[in-house]
Image (cartoon, rainbow, N blue to C red; front, side, top):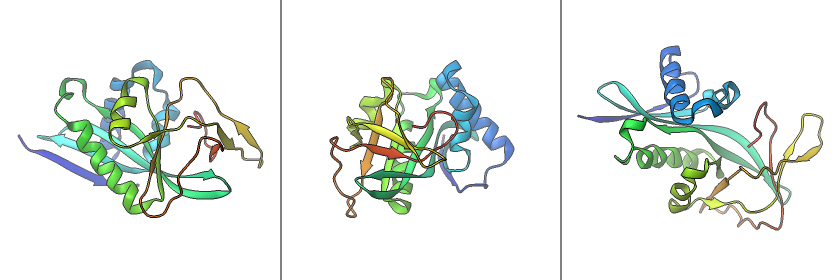
Length: 182
């Protein structure tokens, strides 16, 4: 069996590819995964792991803007990370995130994601920093709103290319989008 990694830029996946990826992610997250959750990642760069043409793992990196201490960062925001349940334990999550993080490092100043509780140790072990500070979001009318939610586990992947160190003493601010802001 040969594992293949496919990197698809926005618009390169067929409707069938997208439907397969959405089904995989929905199966992983169950009823808590809503339509807007999937739509957040559709226009991103997709990482697909297949074996014998069967989709085993998926992630998407979308471009967002995060602000911190008056500076805006072009951010690779990770969405829809999933490994097919019967394939877990094979290191496919590591493989999909290796490629996802490579995309972030090549195309963005910063990486960020909001992890489910069970995945938090996985991201922390990969060097992602749990954000313990305040979170906010820009609104379409120019206001800034608080976005703290106890279920959020925001992680930041700081880059070695000069991005400043983040301190929880200042808020991390995301751009606006429909549905969950983080």
